Image (cartoon, rainbow, N blue to C red):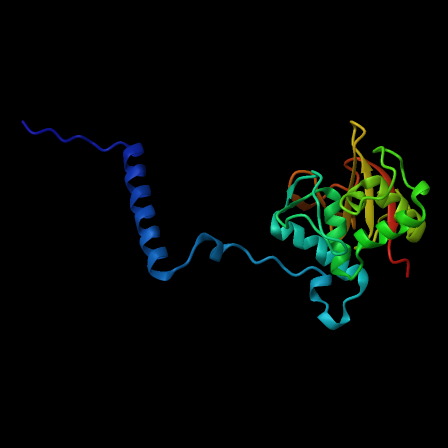
Amino acid sequence: MKRNFPISSGLMFLIIACFAFTAYIFFMDKTGLSLTDFSPVEKPSPVEKIAPQDLTAPDLILLGARQEVKNKTTYNASYQKIEYPGGDVPANHGACTDVVIRAFRNAGYDLQKMIHEDMMANFALYPDNWGLTQPDSNIDHRRVPNQIVFFKRFGRELTIDADDFGQWHWGDVVYWRFANGDEHCGIISDKTLASGKPLVIHNAGIAKEENCLDKWEITWHYRFPCD
């Protein structure tokens, strides 16, 4: 006697899934589309809506920092010999300070050159943390303490109160101290939470734009240029 073997619901689901996947591959192959073509389009940020000819220094600093996120820059703070001026480590990696350096360079400010020139003239004003007897244009500008001294001398020092949202403007530089004592930095974004709290662009592993302003102890907050 012939028996009928009912198909289990699990097997039926597997058959349907395989059919759907085969149809998807066929469709994508014929149309040349991919899953990214169906991803939601992110709305432009306030600065991204500004006409190129109207962009100011803070706007360009922000956009330079955001490019690090788009590039998915990975963290690497190793010492490397680079050109001077205008030198940079390979674009696919960098330290937290390289987010700041590249951001300002996008606005026409070469921190490598500016910090090196100030250290040449005022070496004793900068931290003696690395046993150097003279400036080193390969690395000086990539060190958080040196950036802090430079901005303290030539920038505007602002509040470190993370709840005073009105005092944080895109393009500002924020410095933090991690729980282990390490120092970190980032660029304030023009994107905010509903509360008005700004996101920050930084690199602590890979460049991100995220809600982290008060994630660590804020030590300094600077604006450069001051006007």
